Amino acid sequence: MLLLSYFFPDRSISWYLFVATLVEASWEVIENTPYVIEAMRMTLNTSEYRGDTVLNSFFDIVSMLVGFGYAWRAPTWLTWITILAVEVFTMVAVRVSLFFTIFLFVFPIDVLQAWQVAAW
Image 1 (cartoon, rainbow, N blue to C red):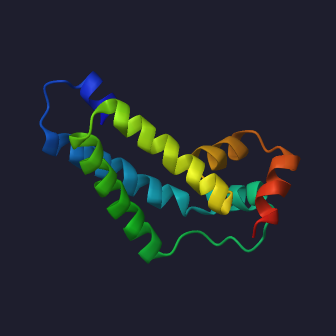
Image 2: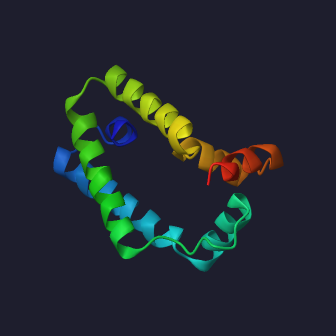
């Protein structure tokens, strides 16, 4: 929402919500293409990854909507702290986070991949 409001400052919150939902839903489709599934298999060093289920994709979109509502109401600094806390928590709890997954997707470092997979 921060980027949208920067580039499109005169739009309504419902417009921002529509665009954010469109982007999230598009990602859910892209994430389940054979190319991305195969790339994730290589990144995670597992042949078992099959992509997301429809239910998982649905709740990813619901989670985005909850986060959007939170970001809309919370101060920007608190939103950033919350994002950081969630990333750190998921790294400690299950060795997977959005940042870490993207990082390993772009820079597949064997030692980090082995550390992540060891938790499973």
